[in-house]
Image (cartoon, rainbow over all chains, first blue to last red; front, side, top):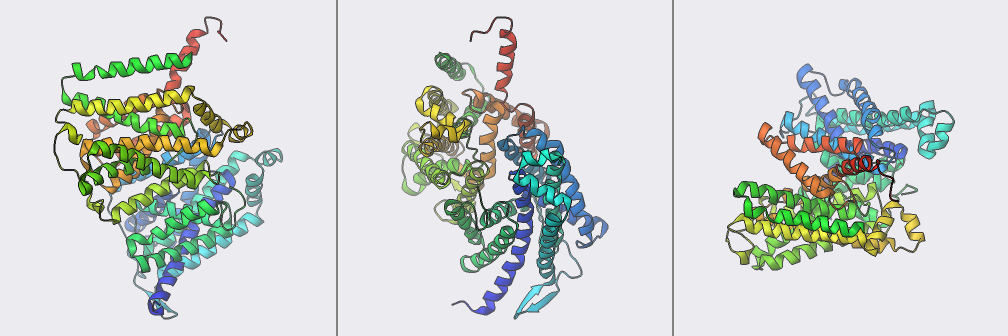
Length: 290
Length: 325
């Protein structure tokens, strides 16, 4: 039996990381639910947002939490423009094409970052970088606590947005029935782009919450993208609650895997889940259809 | 009819390529031809599953890397001759492909899901080859230099030329066969409309498994060739995303689901990467970023690939005469 003194901190660590995975996955699942495409550039866009937070801090001294006012709207604008300008246009109505275009986007973003920023790993320092709070006998960095609750609040806001506003209703209508939505006067292209923008804006929020306790390099998105996919697949494509639960589960599995198998193989648990779920329950825990 | 014409065209093209070692004097120019043939093999292997079968793999490195590591590890750890290792490499890559195919197709995973599964498998294999001992881990594996035909190491790069020429021809002939065989017809039917194909009695699962096996086999052979040509491998080369991207980019640029598309794509990609290296140098990122741009531009403006330019031209040309059909 493993000593609870080691177990509890890594459990908490897993939950806080998992909340951020959930946030990243939320954006992915929103885009999937509406557009029925997997945004392969999701990880690359997260990396872009992280660089945004990093440079805002380094060049202008803007705190990552203040950057919440800047980065998510900027990401939203980028997402909206990409969907309207490139992805929607290149698709020719075929899902495989969208897959390829988002793959192309991720290749471009990642390699341009590699070109401009080299593969250096960068971190920022904040006044609260080394602050911790004690919880159940474990010391948790403040930044991780903020990230955890920030992710939950964002998820709640997103849920409220989807169920209470007209745009949210339009998005859900489009997810269910594309033709019908068009017939009742929903501007399909606009709503598609709005959903894509909102999904990408989630990454902006995640980046702001992540940066104080994390790092950025051009490859950072790559690790996240498979985790986000696993989260979404685990929770069920298109399911919000599924993405939240999936994210937390994955976070804990990763932390436990790291504890028992060592860091390099810790990620292995994630892939094992991914492949097992795809093999035995491709609809995920809460999803309905493939 | 069209198939016989295609076969003739194929044999003429490969016959012309076969003259290269006789009139190309400079080894570096011959290396260009070798590189194009190798990339064409990589792309044609993907084309079997992606172009003819409509199953887009984002992780063909899983098969490529398995072929490459098999021949290298068998040589170094067990002293097994690379010619035998080549067969083993192809078959083991096929085994991995069948496993991935089984995991995905049994539950009818398609489209995005299949792309994800293949990507995840390649990543799993990359992590594994990084962590276990017999692959040399992250340091990589170096095949000792012993130039001898028996070792599949050629002092003169004409040897490598004949090797890749033969492998490539075998792969192209297989794809030609797809275009005229019953199996190929099933495969294309599955690609165009899976439900309709099933309704007509096509065994969708078996057909896809056949395609993934062939695709994995030839991708593995490309890996074997890579290992014997460069005599060095590490997890990122073998299982990294660059190979997966190159594999799918070649047929997409040239024309998916066509016999000659991958050859055109390979020539374009190789020329492009040489031009970039010449003008910008070996700066990390640039070459792949250009691949990304190319991928989007082709999907956006020429979704049937460069080869469709020919058919457009042909149609415009034949408009003057009444159509045959």
